[in-house]
Length: 275
Image 1: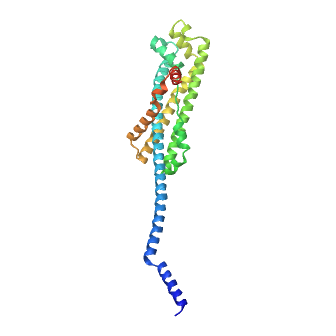
Image 2: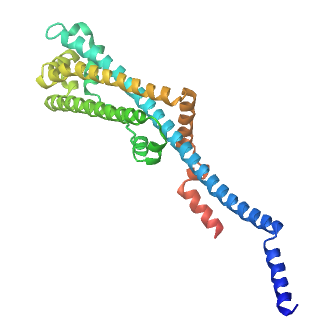
Image 3: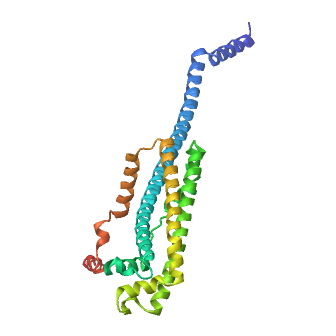
């Protein structure tokens, strides 16, 4: 046997070593381990990202429903005030023109003041904007009807706000015209001042539409409450969760760092001391 056989045996030994079972086990194990590690890394990141989006979506929904709760409570307060005004306005108009004195001077003053009062409405559109502009929130909600109901709530509340402001504008315009002719305190007595107000056609028109607008606002308020309660049921959101969301908003709104309360003079003195 020559050198050729020797080389063949050496090549065979190298190939045998290459195809050694243990070596392949180790190599395959390392490769599979690496692949699993990559999959777990990306899979975990993807899971955490989705979980984070879902948690953020629920927080946004909680804040939205809490905002709607607050809006309906504010509207209920407004409705109670409008109902009291309706009772007062109806009573005064029913005693025109000769029995107005039966109300008494105090009630007539309240009537004049109520007709000429302006109510400041605080409308916060921040939460509705956040919800409507958050595409991730929409994706995380399984029930599309929830989105529709929330949108309807904000639309109805906006219509109510506009209708009330129209009526208030008419009332204030009529009262301003009445005041420009003769302020109520310039009349000989409060009965004559109230009678002059009630004799005006623009005032009588406001008194005519006032109960109708109030009833319309009451009906739409009931609709918003029903839609909002339905969303709470579908999403299984408890009142305790909404209260916690409200506390979070209040904490972020009213917790002020003591350093922020320092006067400019104090800040100036501190800077001078540092120099």
